Image (tube, rainbow, N blue to C red; front, top):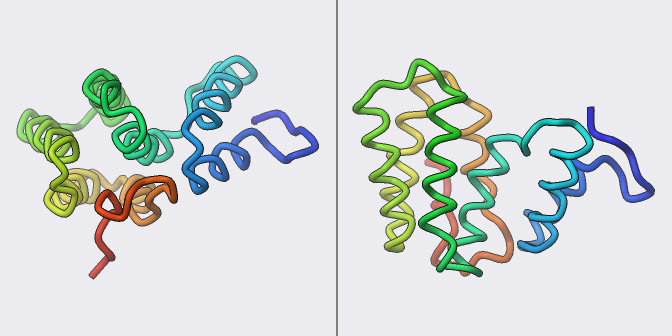
Length: 139
Protein backbone atom coordinates (compact mmCIF):
# COMPACT_ATOMS: atom_id res chain seq x y z
CA UNK A 1 0.00 0.00 0.00
CA UNK A 2 1.20 3.51 -0.74
CA UNK A 3 2.07 5.79 2.14
CA UNK A 4 -0.25 8.60 3.13
CA UNK A 5 0.70 12.25 3.28
CA UNK A 6 -1.26 15.40 4.05
CA UNK A 7 -2.10 15.44 0.33
CA UNK A 8 -3.43 11.85 0.28
CA UNK A 9 -1.93 8.59 -0.87
CA UNK A 10 0.88 8.63 -3.38
CA UNK A 11 -1.35 6.86 -5.92
CA UNK A 12 -4.05 9.51 -5.48
CA UNK A 13 -1.44 12.22 -5.94
CA UNK A 14 -0.09 10.42 -9.02
CA UNK A 15 -3.53 10.23 -10.61
CA UNK A 16 -4.04 13.93 -9.85
CA UNK A 17 -0.71 14.84 -11.45
CA UNK A 18 -1.57 12.78 -14.54
CA UNK A 19 -5.02 14.38 -14.81
CA UNK A 20 -3.46 17.83 -14.47
CA UNK A 21 -0.83 17.09 -17.11
CA UNK A 22 2.01 17.68 -14.64
CA UNK A 23 4.80 15.55 -16.12
CA UNK A 24 7.41 16.59 -13.56
CA UNK A 25 4.98 15.76 -10.75
CA UNK A 26 4.22 12.39 -12.33
CA UNK A 27 7.91 11.55 -12.60
CA UNK A 28 8.56 12.61 -8.99
CA UNK A 29 5.60 10.63 -7.65
CA UNK A 30 6.50 7.55 -9.70
CA UNK A 31 9.93 7.58 -8.05
CA UNK A 32 8.37 8.06 -4.60
CA UNK A 33 5.99 5.17 -5.16
CA UNK A 34 8.85 2.90 -6.22
CA UNK A 35 11.00 3.90 -3.23
CA UNK A 36 8.22 3.61 -0.65
CA UNK A 37 6.54 0.45 -1.97
CA UNK A 38 9.16 -1.28 -4.09
CA UNK A 39 6.62 -1.32 -6.93
CA UNK A 40 6.24 0.69 -10.10
CA UNK A 41 3.35 2.98 -10.87
CA UNK A 42 0.27 1.09 -12.11
CA UNK A 43 0.54 0.02 -15.73
CA UNK A 44 -2.57 2.01 -16.69
CA UNK A 45 -0.97 5.15 -15.29
CA UNK A 46 2.24 4.40 -17.18
CA UNK A 47 0.31 4.14 -20.43
CA UNK A 48 -1.40 7.47 -19.85
CA UNK A 49 1.89 9.04 -18.79
CA UNK A 50 3.34 8.11 -22.18
CA UNK A 51 0.96 10.65 -23.75
CA UNK A 52 2.30 13.33 -21.43
CA UNK A 53 5.85 12.45 -22.38
CA UNK A 54 4.96 12.66 -26.07
CA UNK A 55 3.23 16.02 -25.58
CA UNK A 56 5.84 17.68 -23.35
CA UNK A 57 9.15 15.89 -23.92
CA UNK A 58 8.92 14.32 -27.38
CA UNK A 59 12.66 13.63 -27.39
CA UNK A 60 12.12 11.18 -24.52
CA UNK A 61 9.24 9.37 -26.21
CA UNK A 62 11.15 6.63 -28.10
CA UNK A 63 12.93 5.39 -24.98
CA UNK A 64 9.82 5.72 -22.80
CA UNK A 65 7.79 3.77 -25.38
CA UNK A 66 10.40 0.99 -25.45
CA UNK A 67 10.43 0.78 -21.66
CA UNK A 68 6.63 0.66 -21.59
CA UNK A 69 6.54 -2.05 -24.26
CA UNK A 70 8.95 -4.18 -22.23
CA UNK A 71 6.84 -3.67 -19.13
CA UNK A 72 3.59 -4.62 -20.90
CA UNK A 73 5.22 -7.78 -22.25
CA UNK A 74 6.48 -8.66 -18.76
CA UNK A 75 3.19 -7.98 -16.96
CA UNK A 76 0.82 -9.62 -19.44
CA UNK A 77 2.49 -13.00 -19.92
CA UNK A 78 0.01 -14.49 -22.40
CA UNK A 79 0.64 -11.90 -25.11
CA UNK A 80 1.44 -13.40 -28.49
CA UNK A 81 3.91 -12.28 -31.11
CA UNK A 82 1.08 -10.69 -33.17
CA UNK A 83 -0.03 -8.85 -30.00
CA UNK A 84 3.51 -7.54 -29.57
CA UNK A 85 3.44 -6.37 -33.19
CA UNK A 86 0.18 -4.49 -32.58
CA UNK A 87 1.70 -2.86 -29.50
CA UNK A 88 4.76 -1.72 -31.45
CA UNK A 89 2.52 -0.37 -34.21
CA UNK A 90 0.37 1.47 -31.68
CA UNK A 91 3.39 3.07 -30.00
CA UNK A 92 4.71 4.20 -33.38
CA UNK A 93 1.28 5.62 -34.27
CA UNK A 94 1.23 7.62 -31.05
CA UNK A 95 4.61 9.08 -31.94
CA UNK A 96 3.32 10.03 -35.40
CA UNK A 97 0.11 11.56 -34.04
CA UNK A 98 -2.31 8.88 -35.26
CA UNK A 99 -3.96 8.45 -31.89
CA UNK A 100 -7.30 6.94 -32.98
CA UNK A 101 -5.53 4.11 -34.81
CA UNK A 102 -3.20 3.57 -31.85
CA UNK A 103 -6.13 3.46 -29.47
CA UNK A 104 -7.88 0.86 -31.63
CA UNK A 105 -4.84 -1.45 -31.59
CA UNK A 106 -4.27 -1.00 -27.85
CA UNK A 107 -7.92 -1.76 -27.11
CA UNK A 108 -7.76 -4.89 -29.25
CA UNK A 109 -4.73 -6.24 -27.42
CA UNK A 110 -5.87 -5.32 -23.91
CA UNK A 111 -9.50 -6.39 -24.26
CA UNK A 112 -8.50 -9.76 -25.75
CA UNK A 113 -6.33 -10.40 -22.68
CA UNK A 114 -9.04 -9.31 -20.21
CA UNK A 115 -7.02 -6.28 -19.15
CA UNK A 116 -10.02 -4.02 -18.59
CA UNK A 117 -8.04 -1.77 -16.26
CA UNK A 118 -5.75 -0.92 -19.18
CA UNK A 119 -8.68 -0.30 -21.52
CA UNK A 120 -10.06 2.02 -18.83
CA UNK A 121 -6.75 3.91 -18.79
CA UNK A 122 -7.37 4.83 -22.42
CA UNK A 123 -10.58 6.64 -21.45
CA UNK A 124 -8.92 9.42 -19.45
CA UNK A 125 -6.25 11.29 -21.40
CA UNK A 126 -4.02 13.60 -19.41
CA UNK A 127 -5.22 17.20 -19.29
CA UNK A 128 -1.80 18.50 -20.24
CA UNK A 129 -1.77 16.74 -23.59
CA UNK A 130 -2.77 18.83 -26.58
CA UNK A 131 -6.27 18.25 -27.91
CA UNK A 132 -4.87 16.30 -30.88
CA UNK A 133 -3.31 13.80 -28.46
CA UNK A 134 -6.50 12.95 -26.62
CA UNK A 135 -7.95 9.50 -27.06
CA UNK A 136 -11.14 9.42 -29.09
CA UNK A 137 -14.39 9.00 -27.17
CA UNK A 138 -15.56 5.47 -26.63
CA UNK A 139 -18.23 4.33 -29.04
